[in-house]
Length: 247
Image: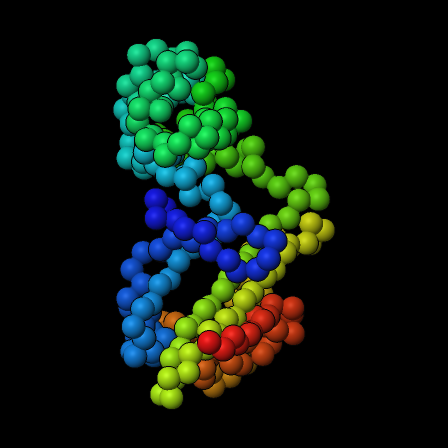
């Protein structure tokens, strides 16, 4: 996440992108061994990776059991213990947070600390300890304060981008973009995109469709399997928009 850089997909969105684990195997998965560079990344709104990186630096993403993490502790007490702060008052906590998080600027420091106040993790409110670790405890808090309110919706955004140099020396950039907004009165975009696709694949398998007749655990990287699924998924409004730019 520390490597996140501004990345344009569509006008109106302010995204950054960062590498998502090991991208190299996908060159073979997708059958493009001639590709010189393959990057598989994640898109986030600008500011999100820096915030999550700060939480990681402060220990909030740790999954190991903490013997000192006990019911009845306040968020300020947890923060003090996790960071080794001199006291649990907000001023002492913020001083220690700035030492540990290593913010890149004063503006970033103010923005992220403001977000932590909103999350409640600097407060004297008692935390609901979950799983005996910091990550699960934080996730319980986030689930409480960040669940969808009436009228709110999510967004799924995906882009495939290929920069191609043909045998004649001509270059083209091919993009395939998927933009889907959730429906507040029905399904989230994520549940619609994932659930509909899984449902269609399951129905094809139950119908004995040749695309899903091979035994074993198979990943949908080949057209033989993907195309029948894609054709039915598009009928449900789940569709990529393709474009080509020369030069």
